[in-house]
Length: 203
Ligand SMILES: Nc1nc2c(c(=O)[nH]1)N[C@H]1C(S)=C(S)[C@@H](COP(=O)(O)O)O[C@H]1N2
Ligand SMILES: [Mo]
Image 1 (cartoon, rainbow, N blue to C red):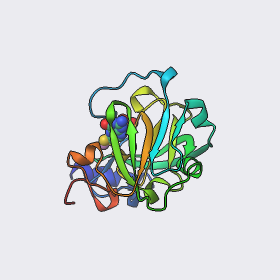
Image 2: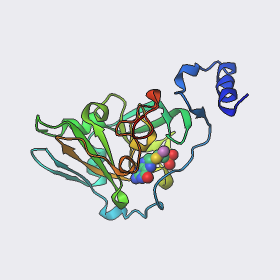
Image 3: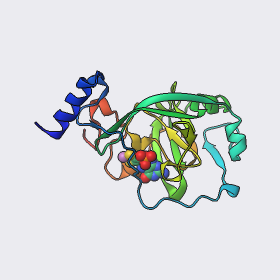
């Protein structure tokens, strides 16, 4: 029996619904660390969160200003394109919807491009970004986020492959078009639905 088949059968044996596991994925209890390049050094004193593009007034918030926008918590399964999934991850932080409510967005807007340390970017349609449950998280499983997982702030968009969940996020631009981010320019799918196995260009 293959590793993937055995992994799926173990879920059933544990009474976990295997339909939660997208095709081609396996479940792990571990929390792998993945990013392009090295883990950034964060200068927390100069840290800011900026929002630009098609908004009536561009935003620049300190960390405390950002955190005062709202608070929320959610638990979700996450799925990395390198085939690991992790169930019941718990996050808290600021709901994306609360951030969005602060903005006067031009009606022509369709997408956002998230911006992070080291110039990392990721694109999302607005309806996938401003979605119930999505968070800008500063805490994971009841503790402060670890630097390697995106401290002080990361996006969590659990319904798409985890490369959209930008670590060390520093803001976003609101756009009237779609535009590939870092991984999307490097062969990953523009949308990335794990249940449709949209891993790469052409999937
Ligand atoms: N800033 C930044 N965020 C990123 C990435 C990256 O390279 N840079 N990689 C993505 C990918 S491919 C994955 S699978 C997840 C991994 O998050 P983790 O290290 O907390 O497991 O982060 C995503 N967010
Ligand atoms: Mo990934």
